[in-house]
Length: 68
Image 1 (tube, rainbow, N blue to C red):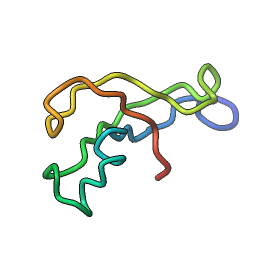
Image 2 (cartoon, rainbow, N blue to C red):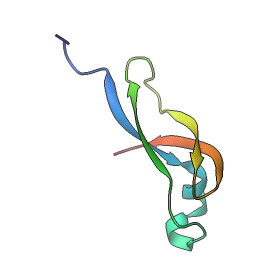
Image 3 (cartoon, rainbow, N blue to C red):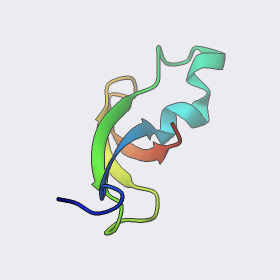
Image 4 (spheres, rainbow, N blue to C red):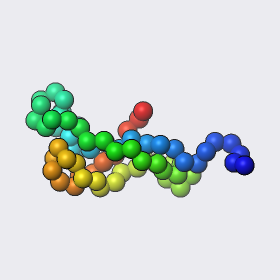
């Protein structure tokens, strides 16, 4: 049995390029790319950043962890 809090937490990764361009405000791109993944809280206490494919930018961009 695990003691205390679980080490694995679910995080949401959001495209940094889409949010900088103001996708919802300017309507330059049709939306914001988001991915849901899990991270180990003990191994990576800082914010997670991964390079993932953004369908709105049509290229691989950095996706950063956002608050829920």
